[in-house]
Length: 216
Ligand code: HEC
Ligand code: HEC
Image 1 (cartoon, rainbow, N blue to C red):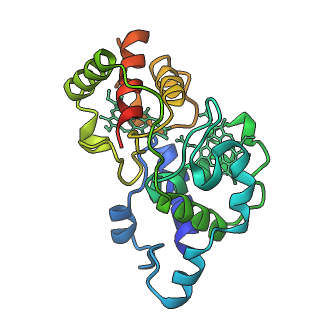
Image 2 (image 1 turned 120 degrees about the horizontal axis):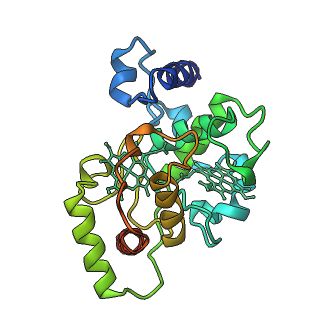
């Protein structure tokens, strides 16, 4: 609990300094208590196994166990825990505005945020069921490789730390979020994406989204 409170202070502090987010490493060396959310003891292991009660409130939009079937609602399954923790805190604090989630996290304490992040990060991603367009897939692969997206999101696009998973994310949500970054409409999001998509056409973003969505 301490760790999240410290993380929040660091997050908001870092925000003021230009949005450079804390990472696990920074937390470990930054004087935070040496607590990890990974179940280190028997008691946390048992709570981590059961879905937190509040996860049921997410299912309507993010799907059972975080695998979304709803247009423009992202899949949360298999996202890096740090990305989910940071994002949920930003949404709760109103720093990242998500209209559909307004008020939903009011009063949700850090312990619950950690439990939710931990829960969704452990859920397996569902295989994409839409058919693959080979030409778009190859074009997306080339664009992603040239733009070095994998340096942050990892070469298999599974994400790490505060960098979200792109592999297996809903295609429509990827298009939506990339457009917001490109057009400088993304509010309350990590500034590392600023400029990354400058000059990309709508078709480029569509091909990138198709490629990522088809990956496992
Ligand atoms: C009424 C629908 C709705 C409910 C209920 C809801 N969400 Fe969301 N959530 C959304 C939408 C829509 C977005 C995408 C916002 C955007 O970026 O445009 C989102 C975004 C997110 C994101 C950011 C994901 C990313 O990849 O950027 C996280 C994390 C999240 N929600 C977690 C939760 C959790 C945890 C709950 C339950 C406590 C929850 N949401 C309940 C609709 C909902
Ligand atoms: C310097 C590191 C870095 C590079 C390079 C980078 N990203 Fe990101 N990306 C991030 C971070 C950090 C976030 C999290 C933003 C947030 O939620 O505040 C992110 C978020 C995203 C998201 C939102 C996903 C979600 O679930 O909300 C998409 C889509 C994305 N990046 C695509 C790309 C693509 C495509 C490229 C290459 C053209 C790329 N990124 C290159 C760091 C990077």
